[in-house]
Amino acid sequence: MIPNSWYTALCTSSVLWNASENSLLIASNPTPLTWKNAPKANAFILPYFVMAYLTRRPGTYALRLMLLPLVILLTFWCTVQYHMENPIDGWYNWVRGLIACVTIQKVIQFAVTRSGMFKVGEESLNDVRLCAGVEVHRNGLKRFLPACIYDALEVGITTRGLGWQFAEGTHVPRARRTSERTAYMKHTAYSILRNYLFADFCDSAVSLLPGVTVNGGTIFLPSLSPVPRYLLSTTIQYTVGMFIILAIEMWYDVVSLIGVGLFRQSPVLWPPIHDEPWRMSSLHDFWSKRWHQVLRNTFLILGGYPGRRLAGSTGMLFGTFIASGLFHEIGFHLGGAPLDPKVLLFFVAQAFGILGEKMYRAVTGKRVGGWGGTLWGAIFLLGIGQMCTDSWVARGAAGRPIVPPGMSVSTRVIIPALRSVVASRL
Image (cartoon, rainbow, N blue to C red; front, top):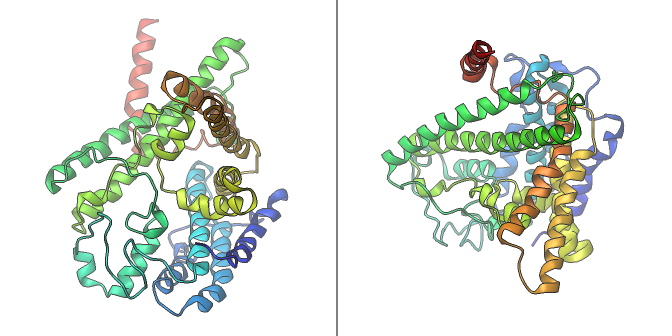
């Protein structure tokens, strides 16, 4: 249960959004981010983990509330004040913006949860038991760090929250890899390589669209007639979606390989991050199970729970997706891009789509599913989703490759080879 006092804390962070109508979230003269000033640009990390430490210590509620606005403001200042100067690196500024949003959400939760953050099976901060089938092994890192420091790292780093009470009810995909350590590491290493190559190809292919630069572009090519124009934009939307899935899975695999290989964690603690999104049976199935649930708690804290207070389950549905839309848009804006409401509209549309599924069930007594449910989900994701992707492309996202050109196999080898083959046959 989240206490009423957290509304005050949430209002503190929402001021950042209220000021953003005139792009006030972007510093007028940001400092170029370099290796030399990186400690200053990331100075919020230390007080963030102090908050994580305090939320696992009894009797710290008042102190956490006092520190909350300071940590939020420091996180905000560090993010907007320091930017990577080269426009081609814009994606990394966006990632910093998203990290800032998650950091603010988590410190709000750390501060306003009066009793502190409990693991599954704990009834007080003095109870260190874990249960509910989540086995946490003593690993090398835990053996060498004081328990209080390990606690701070554990609650501070977790987002999906496996083994924590705040994540109870989160869908966890069934394991699709062996739990034997050596075999798991080999399979994961292969997955990283495979996802890297496919994600790199998708990223490089979208950047080749006519008119796409670091300053803008569109997925709707005006030179084409309507039918091929929207067939192409739908193909691009699918490609972008697959890129996002593969990139997220790749980085998750990298982190899991570190956890299992370096810190000797059990592979059981690293279930798949996605649950085969292409197998969705409805829009609700996609967002509640198939898509990754890493940020589920973020959107519930910032929008879902306040929405439920205001308008019950419907308010929770819309509040969650509004928070998701603001998260993506504010993160992009903190990265230096101008604001565009189309991203928020896309996420709000998802709530209307799921509400439609609930109404269908209320009228017919049946759940949305089968090919009809898949088609319904595709309309919202591949159809309506195009306005979100086009918004990102229009603000230069496609012209800023996530994979550095020097490390891109597609840019350096595959695409030039394909061009040579095509040219030889013309």
